[in-house]
Image 1 (tube, protein in one colour):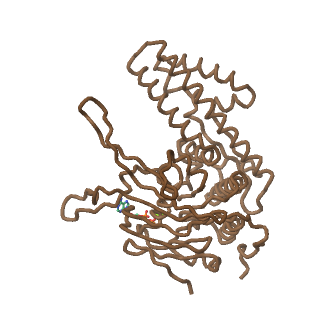
Image 2 (cartoon, rainbow, N blue to C red; image 1 turned 120 degrees about the vertical axis):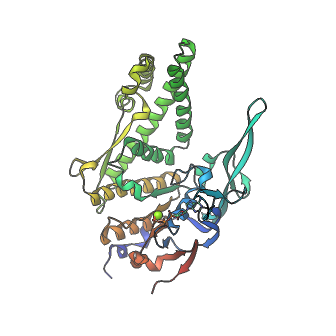
Image 3 (cartoon, rainbow, N blue to C red; image 1 turned 135 degrees about the vertical axis):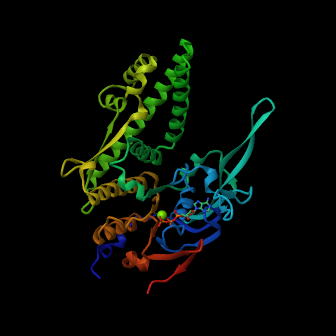
Length: 411
Ligand SMILES: Nc1ncnc2c1ncn2[C@@H]1O[C@H](COP(=O)(O)OP(=O)(O)OP(=O)(O)O)[C@@H](O)[C@H]1O
Ligand SMILES: [Mg+2]
């Protein structure tokens, strides 16, 4: 068979692999209990629409830092029963929550990664308390003090059908995509982002309430400035590195992309020292104290956009065809995966939801051979398992039916 996948030279493969040997889901979306064993670099889940393919990728994504590939609330993940006779409101089955666990093999060491939800009671006021859900993570049965520690064991990259519209959707989606790239390299970035949101919200609230306490406002502006410029620096550093990397390793199938940050603070950092940018940001915030200016202000890192250019054609991604946009997205993803492998010393696990859509056979096979070369383990979903016939000797197939996945063998 003359497909792009077969051009692989096994010797060029990255040596270290990062491999899930099994996966267990308990009360996770449509799965009450599911146990799967893996022994191949490609694991393919097939099934009808709504059968639960993406749910399995989401479960795997919870083995990394954050809220998973759907950015879900913890409470919506737990299996619910529909009360068929009554109004169709989901009721959650019990209080035991959900859990995902997997055995990870890396550098011939094994790690049992487990995650579940823990409820704790938090006193919010005198005589008043509230149940708070928190995701806890264990490695080899030891509870991690923070999810950030997971980055030492595993890294993950995902592509979902929602990302097909990345270059045409609102700036929020591209900013999240950008920040996810940064987070994969810089483990403090997620914490910086949530601290920023927290102080920025406090500052806005004070302004909305008409509070004129200068000391209080100045103290918040100082924090916004400090964290904001750190966020902008981290974004700039990772995007610059990714651009250099893409230029150094051009790809014959996926077009080279050029990434640029469209944000006042990030742009200023191109030719001004961080200390100058901090002063500028602080002054800008002070001027924005008049609430009427707030809606128009772009001088803040939470409005930054990620611009992507199809380099050879010098055309913005949003003007490219659907297939070109998908190829550009994959070009960024492959570069991120390669750079992560170099940076961390082990490859990321790839979650590719409905990746075959908009990709011709040549590109699909080229993508799979690059993943194979990086030595990533990839979990893929499809409605037609024969889309992946060309890689069947490296792949394991599971069919999902009635909320359960069963291994199948292609003829
Ligand atoms: N908390 C939950 N408890 C039980 N079932 C849930 C829960 N959340 C979602 N589901 C169910 O999971 C199913 C969707 O699963 P999923 O998105 O994985 O399907 P899919 O196979 O990827 O479908 P498609 O091919 O359309 O992308 C839906 O039927 C939905 O009702
Ligand atoms: Mg799906």
